[in-house]
Length: 386
Image (tube, rainbow, N blue to C red):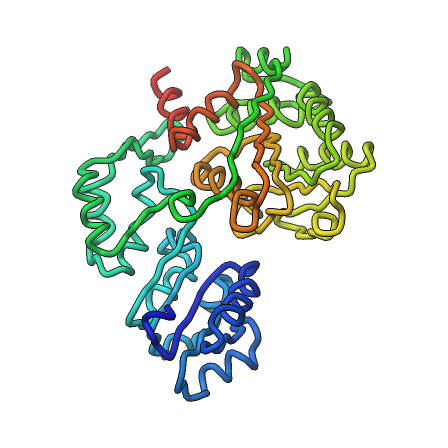
């Protein structure tokens, strides 16, 4: 953006990154004036002040489509930080952003594609490739439809003409680099802690129904079966909860913990309180990182959708995966979650602890994540064949 030399520039990012971008520009590019687009008075000044030198408006995705005046703005350079957030072209923010007028476009994303080419259409469209979504999918994405749930479900089986697709992506300016190809970061080490599946899990696999802790779990559809298998490996697995407690007792370091369900969170908080560990929580209802910043022995409990992207947590160098993400977008969430500690500013080796139930859906899920595949699709296909 600085090299392009435009006077009217806009950066769209996650809400948690607005201050980071403002400080970055003010610290490193004193000849560029940064404006906080989340503040009405600064947005008004940016829109009405003549731009005789470089001005940069920083605004978040959740707010930008609620500022219709930006539609009338001629933008020299538009930058989207974490551009994977516009993959759903039907979302209000995506429609608004794709309708902006700009001369130059910079798309940034730390979300690895891992072959998830079906998610790139909106970004490639903004870069100037005028191919319809229907034709894009027809030429490059191999799909099938399944109806075992009473309604059609589109499942991506793979990709085709990949070399041609990569050539087109390069033609429109795409460069995919891993973090380690751009900067030197500390070593990463995975530690696997295996836990035996419970007798309740084994019974549920055979019968699809079980009562545990006074709750009936009935896996009468593929989706509910998957859901309860995951819960039986997590919140209902006492051995896993004990293994989690043992990990917390083994160190006084800051630890980041990723989880999925509210019931898991309740159990994890109870363990933190029993051990007198200060803790922070980041999920759809809470974002309190006070303990993370103030206490070197804190535990930070993060729900994937709320915190796998956008948080800078390099004060810690340890992550515990109590359970793994599963479903659409799970590969990106998992890869992004690892980057919360493995990023600029990290000086210590990074350790990732996986609590895994042997011979369970968790082992299959981890293998799928490593291959860059959403396990849900594979499970649906197997269920249909039965």
